[in-house]
Length: 161
Length: 78
Image 1 (cartoon, helix red, strand yellow):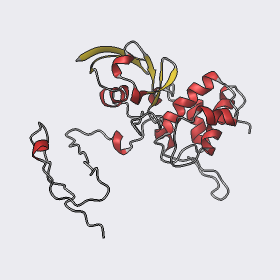
Image 2 (tube, helix red, strand yellow; image 1 turned 135 degrees about the horizontal axis):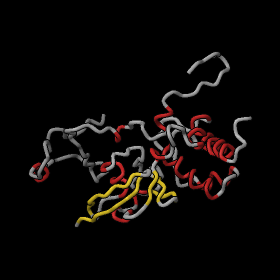
Image 3 (tube, chains in turn yellow, green; image 1 turned 30 degrees about the vertical axis):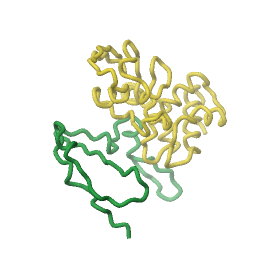
Image 4 (tube, chains in turn green, cyan; image 1 turned 120 degrees about the vertical axis):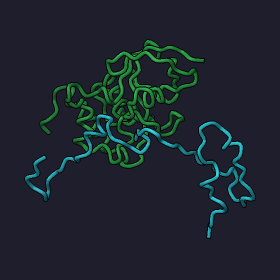
């Protein structure tokens, strides 16, 4: 059975026919060709597929595309505005918050959600809120620093230290 | 990127902008036309000898181009 859905992704409205069983992550990657959202585990453990769904971080490998009808979605491709990286993206770059980069889009989207709720998180809060995102390269030290960088920058106190 | 000093200087990674913005191509992100996809069927047994592999059913499915071409036979484990 097919469903017609209308979804706004990174500001662009898409209307598509999707199979009932199609996962939202497959819709984003294979129908919209936004391959920045990754599939790491297929089981909602790794967080590589994290997107913003109506403003909240969601692992879209365990959502159906049909459930996204009417939703506003932001993927990693939609975070930079007019060529300017978002402070979180800058943070991951400046603080070397990645090696291979596979987990990075999910890390960034989960960090976005965190900083919306807690603008100035301490290290324990960052680690706790990113526990649903796995990185197999770096350990999490520089990821924590990346989020701290973004937090400072977004509250207007970055750049001096 | 201008690098004024090499020793003791912090150098920004070059490939990171693509990663940050979701434009990096990891293997699963590569999109070309006329791709052939493969699936690996692994043995459900930890230690066993392959007596026979019958792929006729798989090959009879629409769009399957090769069911028997890449069999592991009995992989040499020595």
